Image (tube, rainbow, N blue to C red; front, side):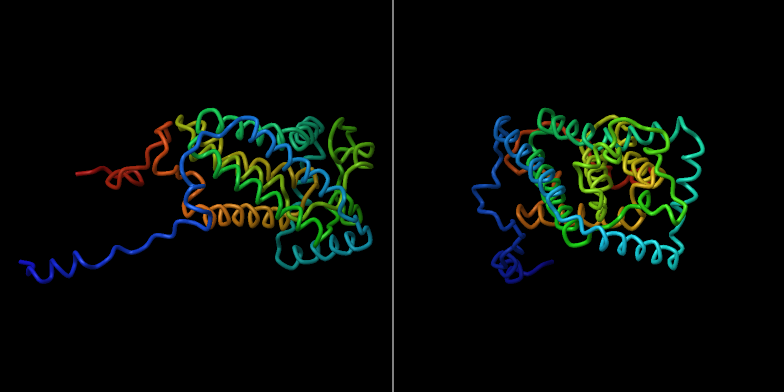
Length: 287
């Protein structure tokens, strides 16, 4: 039996303080996001992304030197399977065309679609998710500035095939006519991978149908195949993309003291997938 004195000591012991974030507490209460404010934030973020991405000095000679260095590093690490995947894709026009259009369109369509879906259906976690992708994109721009990198498709001496040029895919950022207005050396880190990981995690965490959640998990992997198959990125670029999205989640946690998909304690219940019961995790049954 626990003594009365021990009970008194336990009652006097203060509970451990939980980290509640760097932002003022009043900013962490539940507030329904306002559409015009969020639209303005997204527009600002996209403007910073486009202007920053294209305003960074291209430093062509440095970018090509970095491209050769990355190729050498991947050869040393035996991560040089991009060439085999690229040749497999380039030998099948239907596949190359499909991947080129995927690369040029879904990067924006899926990301914006997930943002809108979170705003409408999961407003209690929307702000945290939006903070993650905003911070992720800013770190991506920083990477473009600090490490201009020629993508594999601009290094034909290694045997890569630029599928956009070969098959004349319309509308891709790699299209020569469009490339004139875009920084072709903004490859490290891969924002295609970073945004795909963010969208995939958001769908997995917030969707209810299991098949939709599985699609969310598959989306970043399919994007990885596309960026490699079209010779738009090295594998190391994808690692950089994963790193900056992890930084985005870390910054969001520092600001709020909770995960991006953990709603404020005073938020209404808009519905999220229930976590697995302890007794039923990994396919086991509770007894």
